[in-house]
View: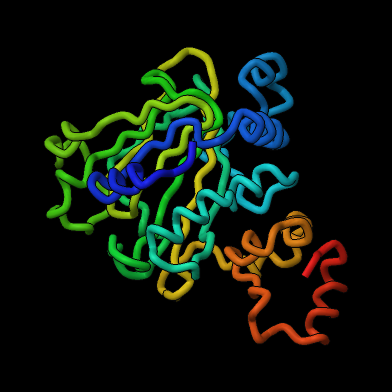
Length: 285
């Protein structure tokens, strides 16, 4: 299902929106297969736990960041519908992917409970503004079904929190019991997409089920205009083999959300174009 005007209106009103069936069955299958290059399914983990000691060593932080080996997770990170939605929401085509990471959680391996918080400390030097191209947009795409027992994300509608100070960024249940009474779980099917703002109070919850795995894909987009925002600066990964492969095979628009120059950019001369083709032999400019 595309991200519609209704989803945008809900995001602006409540600070979050859920897009059911965002991925097509084919996209979902391909992304899950790509995901399996990094993390095993629950049954595989149970059958051969010795192969996956790293999961039990640090079960709360099983994350791998973009760029990925294989095209499908990279293509989801730069999905054309996500790019189009962010352009409409921010009112500009000058947008960047700040972060993309996949995350695995397994029942019976760790404590995933969090307190309500905001994510902006690692994404801006100031505090969020939820207007125009100052807005940053968070996405969580689910590769597994999320029930009440499988650690859903809890969110609090901004209808209740617009007057709540943005600092401090973490609110404990003990000190803020009324805020926790307003939270709601995001229940989702594999392929669903959660969108929320940097000013939306949310938290991860514990996995209560005795078995199963929770797989998700987290992304942040922002305007290219402001240097006080941002999580990653992609040129620092320029020697990464997976990033080189992505740049060679991505569409021009996918490359642009990493900061790659547009075809119309004055950077391009006959000399620079020829040199870039030497660096990325598979690229089409």
